[in-house]
Length: 301
Length: 314
Image (cartoon, rainbow over the protein chains, first blue to last red):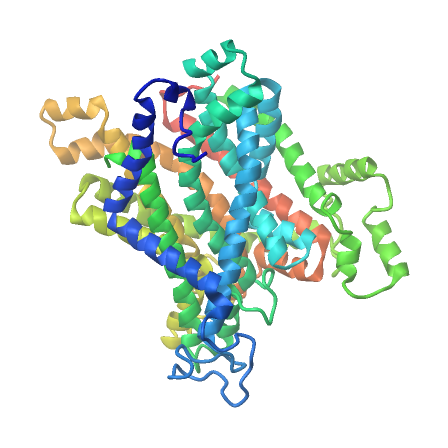
């Protein structure tokens, strides 16, 4: 079952309507494709993901191998982006950092979606005490500055990439819960939901088949935005020394190490800074494009 | 109005209770024994037992929670394991620096965002609009700590215009502190300026679609006057809410900025406490950050009601 065909499944019982529903998404894609910035973002994100996946198979020096006598060397034919203070290849470490950063961001968004979306569906669909019980907790979580809560969580779980993944995911749960709750509140008053209930469909079936699909578009848009935030928070936490631990490569760690060599080896600051910024910018371009393409409110702006 | 404020204050009591449960849960419910984490690789059962007793971890969990919340009511946040100082004292010492950072950053961000958002919306779909929105997206995408490090490299070390570290307390030294506050607050405020410019632009565009704008234009008012007299006034009201939400971001952002510029606020206190596994301090900073954020949001809600006579909360 593709998500495309499952939007408003109740409608697809009507002849010709399945095509109209599908065209919502192809309309969105057509819109996205015409957006140059979003396409640039998509290309960069796909490229980074490919590099991160290929990582160890790329013909690059080992990111952990230290070359004594070649410390903080400027870019050269052997080391395209130079070496760091321990003589390790900067390009290899950036690729290793991409693996760490992207996998943690993907994992964190998965955690946030897989917990936030069901909570939002239950709160919105059942309302009453379920809504109060769930959403008060979400409000309480949103009462913390996100980075402070994430740091406190990492502290109690112990520093490391796994804790960072869980912490970023946890902090992002309320965003998805709120969004999905809104979609569920709107969907449950629709006549197709009433019709399904009249036909004897169970609550679980109504939620999965008729309510959840209405949240797919807004959740997709939010995934884009949250992914960018997750990359920034991961880099921030590893910059502070709470994420990926030495000697493993990570963009935040690289930038933090480079601060001691700013006068002698400025490229050590420049390359990780540029990589983080370009990655986040690309994801933001793509996320903005997704919002423009999928949110009717923005489509004509 | 007084009644509304009272109602909102009463409403925030259950919220604060849930917040306290989350902070309490940080140390007690998470997998892994906090005392074991504190000890690291050391093995010293006697010391472990002492810490357990000190933190009341040897008592039933409900008793612990009641004791902890009871302490909070008396501004007793416990004692730092590392320094043995009361957490409340540590926080009181450090809070002015963090608040200076957050407020000055917010001021800088608004000083950019209000004119930026208005100009972009007024010249919708023009080169100015696209240019400023692209600039906002680019600025927004560079993480605070990257901006901070780049400022240190270029302005601090390269040009040597401003000191790269040192204390900046707006409250105790309003005139002398700007040299220390400028780089940290720019690093912190830049992304908020970008976010709020984008938000203000959309709220202006939303207002521009309304009927009263058409009426004002139809009766012959020049565009500049329509924008300044009607649109801006209505579009600025949500800025209060937007600023409050972004204030929470600034409070979080101070953690990394304080670290980079060597400022001793509650952010660097938090990071030090995390490395020292000083849980009472971690809990104290988290609690105070949440309390400030809740207060700022409450103040914004009240200001919003005062600014917008159409809205009267019951």
